[in-house]
Image 1 (tube, helix red, strand yellow):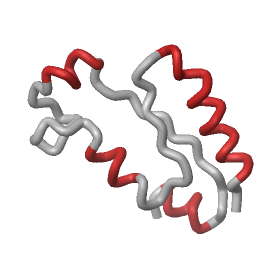
Image 2 (image 1 turned 60 degrees about the vertical axis):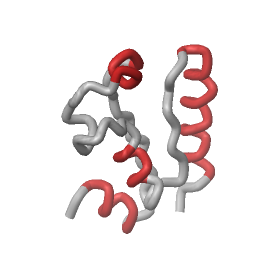
Image 3 (image 1 turned 90 degrees about the vertical axis):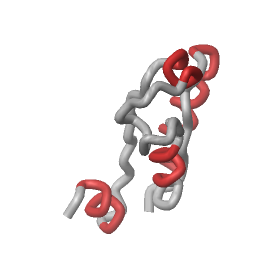
Length: 80
């Protein structure tokens, strides 16, 4: 069983941090393995909304602290 499914079934919160291509690459949309071959870098993030309680995207260092705090807070508050 995958870690995600095990954590979900055992009601254990998971904070999953994923790296993405640079903002320049996301704007110019080169063919990279981080897409489904269609230039959409948000495909996996959209798919994960089906089983997450919070989904954030850091696109600016100005917003980083707030989004990180929000993600950690949601893990603590929404533990099942």
